[in-house]
Image (cartoon, rainbow, N blue to C red):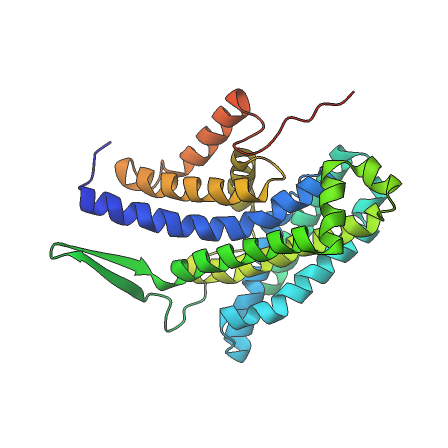
Length: 299
């Protein structure tokens, strides 16, 4: 272990903060789905990689910019989410264990399909702006260089979370979703169609991961099996933030991004991924409800 200079430490801290914004966009849908359905969508990472492949395919085939490809990938992922929940997950309602197994089966199925379509070669999207940075001169000896894509990722995450928050607070469907999160039985008694709410929420959750997948394709290399590592990271984020808490997910993603980035230069890039799982382990022991989650008491 070695301590870098404060210039390097400041740079990697800001990079980690920006990366955390991308993590937040990737994990938001996962915590939203859990909040409504109380099921951990193990296939969330596979849907993330699938959306990244969609961006890659549209870029290489039609020259469509990954940011523009969101126009296509969002409705595709939303539709897949609604159909999967309505015709598959709804058949095992009341049994979270079987729900997890079904989403795991979906993840394996998607992995096989993506491997057949795009093989196992690592893919990524490289545009004219992929490697561009925004220089910020602080002093004569210190210039911060912010990757354009990660800045865009943080802005996109903030906009997406603000839009979801506004939607949940001010729309009828949003109120129905919040009621279902708070108490499913009471929501049903008040006339909320919980099954439709769950299907639409699953679709919204996958629609958000479509945006994350577009950014993912610009930053990281991926293949069909990459989802295994990324679902672990996203689970760590939502557990730290508090499962079902959108603000908690955003804060936890920023914390995780900074921690991972700093540990990569303080330790090594090989050991830094362990930090995610170490934090997950400690949170589960000392504060299982997370930073902004609440304990659920059942009478």
